[in-house]
Amino acid sequence: MASKHTIATRHAQGIRARFASRFLRSLLRLRRSGNRFGGSQSNDEGIGKRIRTDRIKIAAYAAMARAVGPRRSWSRALLFKLRNRARIHGVSRKRCLVSEKKRVTRNKVVAISREPSRADTLRKLVPGGDSMDTCVLLEETAHYIKCLATQVTVMQSIADRLLL
Amino acid sequence: MQPCSREMQGINSLLNPSSQIPLQDLQNQQIQNSHFDPNSSSNDDFLEQMLSAIPPSCSWPDLKSPWDLAMPINSNGNGNSAAKPRDLPDETDNTNVGFHNNFDESVILASKLRQHQISGGGNGASAAAAKMMLHPQFLMASARGGLPQNDVIDGSSFKGGDGSIQELFNGFGAGSMNGTGQASSQSMKHFNHPQGGAMPAQNFGAQVAATTAVMNQPQPSGSNGGAPAQPKQRARRGQATDPHSIAERLRRERIAERMKALQELVPNANKTDKASMLDEIIDYVKFLQLQVKVLSMSRLGGGAAAVAPLVADMSSEAGGDCIQAGAKGGSLARPSNGSQTARTNDSSLTVTEHQVAKLMEEDMGSAMQYLQGKGLCLMPISLATAISTAKCHSRSPAINNNHHPLLQPNGEGPTSPSMSVLTVQSATMGNVGGDGGAAKDAASVSKP
Image (cartoon, rainbow over all chains, first blue to last red):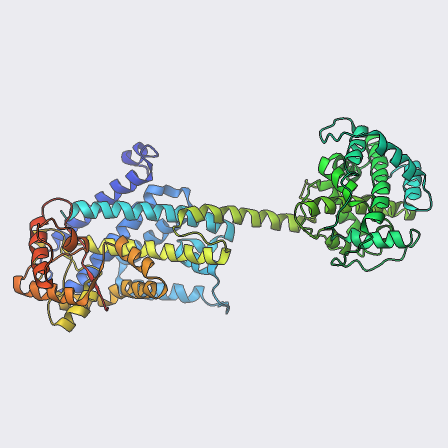
C-alpha cells in the first residue's frame, strides 16, 4: 500500500533521501520500543545489544529495500525475506529456527559438488541472487552496490549527528 | 544463389589460369585509373579505383595469411589443383609475384561477381556478397589479398561441405571486417587468422574469395549449397552466424558491458581480468555489508562498538578497561564492564576482526582504508595501553578516533603517551556534546 509519504517521495528526492527518511523513522520507532522495555538491561546486555544491533541492521536494510521499491529484483527478494523473517519471528523463535533449518536443508538436497565459482559467491551476497542468470546478476549487483554505498554514507552521517 | 551461366563461365575462365584474357583486361584497367576514391558511388568505378590505388603499393611482405600459401601454389603451377594443407605460419618469398596474378584475377572475379549480383540481385548471400564487395575495405582487401584460386576452389579446405559453405556465405553476408572467425571450416579458420589491421582486410578479402570460389562450387554440382540461409543479421565478419554463437556473443557482450559499469562503481577497479574483477566486486560487497553491520552497532545507545572485542583483547593484556564507543556523553557510562561486554560481543564482532586481519595480509593500505571507512583506526599497543590505563583512572569512556589524538587542537603536542592520553581524554570529554568531531567508534589496536 502506498502511503502518502511513499507517493510523495516516489522519485522526487532520489534514493538517498528516501532511504534516510525511512531509516530515521524506523530508528525512532526502535528507540521508542527499546525505551519501553526499560533502559537498564544490565543483566543481559550483551545479547540485548546484539539484538538491537541486528534490529538496527534489519531496519536499515528494510528501509533501503522499501526506498528502492519493487522495481529491482534484489529489493523484492530482500523485502520478501524480511517479511518472512518477521512473520516467523513473530510466531516463536524456536519454531522459527526449526522451520528455517528444515527449509534450508530441503533446498540443499541436490547438492552440486563443485567449487563455488565467483558467480555463486556473488549470488549468495546479493539478495535474491539465486534465481538470476549471470547477466542479470551483474546488473543487480551494480545497483545493489550503489544502494549499499548510499546506505553506508547515510548511516555514517546519521551516526555523526547522533553521537554529538 | 545462382549466378548466371555466363558469369560462371567467366569466373571459371578466371579460375583457370590458362586463360590470360581477364588478366589483360584488368591490366588495362589498372593503367587507366589512378585515383582511389573509397566513397565512390559508382560501382564500376569503385573497383577500378581500388585497383589503381593498390598496385603502387604492391609489396606485402608482412603477409602471413593463407594467401601466402596460396601464392606458391598458384605460382608453382597455375593448373595445380591439388589441395595443400593450409597452415598459416609459412610465408613464402614469391609472394608478390604470385600475388599479383591473384590480385588481378581476384579483382576481376570480384568485379564480375559484383556486377552480376547488382544487376541480377541474386539471393541474400549473393547480394550480401555484392554489398561486401562494394565495401571499401573489402575492395582494398580483395585487391591486396588477392583471391587464392585453386586450393580454395578445390574446396578441399572447405571440409565442412555445405555447412561450411553456408557459414561462409553467412559470414560473408555479414559484411564486417572482424578477424575473429568462428566458422568451423578450416578455411574460415585460416582466413580469420588475425594480425592487426592489415590482416582483417586481407582476411576479409580471403573470405570474399572463399565465398566467391565457393559459389563456384555449388554451381557445377548443382547442390543446394548455393542457397544458404539468409544472413540473419550483419554479424561481424568471420563469426559464424548460427543462432547459438550469435546468442553467445550477445550474452558475452552484455556481460562485458555490465562488468564495465561495475568497474566504475567499485573502487580500485583497475583490473582488466574478469575473474579478478569479480573478486573485487565480491570483496567490495562484503565490505559494504560489513560496514552496514558495524554502523548499526555503533548506533546503539551506549552499545559496544565493533572494536570493543579487539580493544578488549588488547586491554585484557594490558589489564585495563576496554574502550567503548558511546553515543552521547551521558549515556556512555560503561566502566569496567567493558571487558565483559566485549567478550559477550566477541562472537558478533569477530567478523570485523577477521576481515581486518585478512585485509592486512593482502595489503596494508586496503586494511587502513577499510578501517577508516568504519571509523576505526590502528594504534600502537603502547598508546592503547596508556589510554586504557588512563581510562581506568578517570573512569570515563574514551572514544578515540585516530584523528583525535593527533588533531585535537589542544595547543600542546603529545609529549608522551600518558600526556597524550590525558589530552585525548580531556578533549573527547569536551567534545562529547560539542561539535561533530566526537569520535563514535573505538580504536582498534594492532600488534606492532
